[in-house]
Image (cartoon, rainbow, N blue to C red; front, side):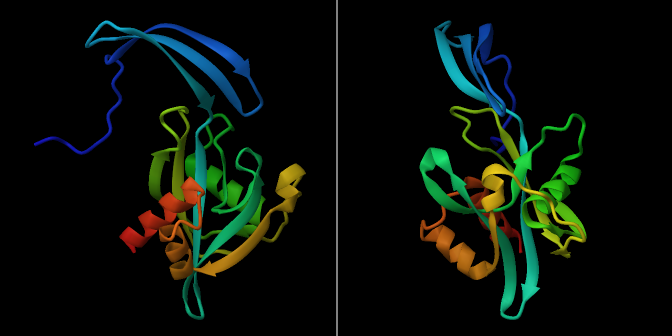
Length: 192
C-alpha cells in the first residue's frame, strides 16, 4: 500500500548551482539549476526563499457557539483587504514555534492564550516558495495586559470575533481567500 505522506527527496534532483537574484527584508529570490535523476534533464527553478511562519486560530465560546478571532489587513500584491488568522514569521533564531505563535497572537491582536496546540502545517505555495506555515489552535483566549505598538500597515489591523460557522460557510462559498485562514478553518472543522 502506498503511504499517504509527503517525504523530502534530495535524490530526485541534483543541485548543480544555486544563485540568489534578489535579497530582501522578508524574502529572497533564488534560481536553482538542477539535474533530474530520472531523465538527466537540466532545468532551472526560480523560487522565493522565505522564513517559515506560524498562524493562530484563536477560538472561544460565544453566546451562540464557538467564535474565532480574525484580523483584517491590507495585502498589496492582491490589492485587497483580507480577513486572516493572526500570523507571523519564525524569524528569531531558535525560537520555539508555539512561543512564536503566542508572540504573534499578542503582537497582532493584543490577546493571549492559555493553550496553543498544533493544528496543521502546509507549504504556502510549494510551486514558487519554500515557506512552511504551522497553524496553532489557541484556547483560553483573553485580552492581554499589555498592548503592542503596531507600525506601518500593521497599525491598520482590524480585529473581530466571528461565529465559527459563519467563517466556515464563507470559506466554502469562496468569499475568504487567505490560505492560512482556509487551511485553519478546514482543519479545525475536521477535528472538532
